[in-house]
Image 1 (tube, rainbow, N blue to C red):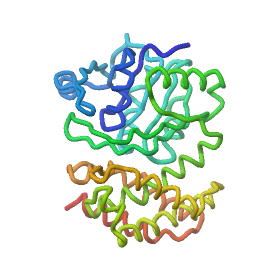
Image 2: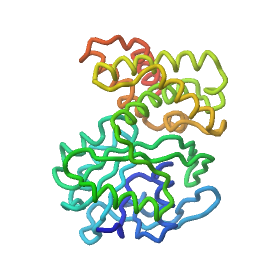
Image 3: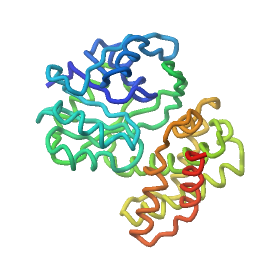
Image 4: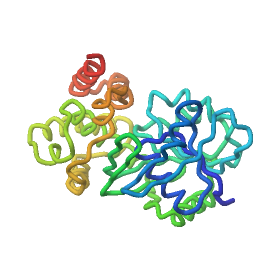
Length: 302
């Protein structure tokens, strides 16, 4: 099959990081954008760790560009609109990878797009910070992926692995991708929400015992909900997370913290909002997530 043409939706930290990997490997990579946003992206490009990259964009109404791979890196609240924009790009052989946070973007995509090959995936361990068109990171992290449903074969998985090897994208194919997605969800529900309320960088979350206690209790609620969903998270996963956290550059900030500071809408619906929904479903207490949800919504409306 091969992946010669790649379409990326979302030019934030993750979209830019993987975009510069594809571009550096000579892949025909385009970002989905139209109007003023398209003009701005193509005029400014982006700079990743000091290296500048020029961008090419494709508008949603383009009927010529045929992507072999679509990488989705948009914010949760933008996903419904994005799905409508990419539908006509998707053929039976198109591979779709979502690197969004959360645990349900693949399900949402599949409900609306009944063709294409969707992979389950999650990115762990990166500490990228974006300021305008400049992205800096000290830890690239790793992209984990595997089958989402029967649309993909072992050959598809192998071809994606080869692509990532060619592009220098650190990756792994775990046997239990659902567990890893919940592990990442646990992390984000804890650190993203607490850091955004405190306007805290990773160093604060690494060293401040009060911030860490709230983060712990938030993640313990995720573990309880995960167990009710049949996912084998445990308190041992908190220890695994702190090993990752302590390896991150202290000046970095979570994506939600960056969004709140910039006055952008957060992904709180995807995190504590989802926890409240699942807590009600399974009759599991998620009091701390309810408090965090209300605090973040309050910050968004100040």
